[in-house]
Image 1 (cartoon, one colour):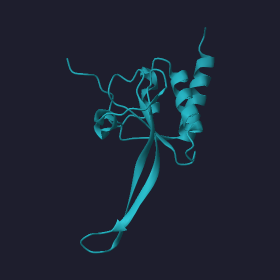
Image 2: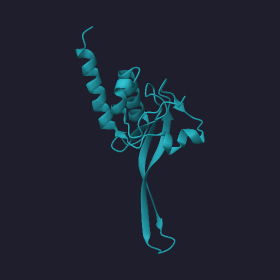
Image 3: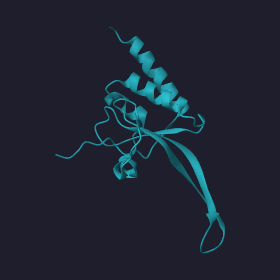
Length: 135
């Protein structure tokens, strides 16, 4: 049996329908983004793609730039990338402190991210939808 995977381009907003507890999941993601010590303007969240998207791992990243010189031409070059700050388990939202190569391998993470404000708006939308549902 092949293991389940969510699409490689999925963001938190794309998997809301498959999350076990969408409001709780998104609230915890936002809490971690708020309290991680990274700049709210630049912090990004990326979800793991292993599994069916019920409680995916997620990682917080921030943009960084590496600058140097091209070894062949001597010209100044720079590369922008997203640096992983923390990884969390989606099931309990606890930080993963011991990583394996599998945890960090890019093929196990979505290629798309969401920012703090996007997550904040998503949580608001989910709460509004939950309130408008008949009991």
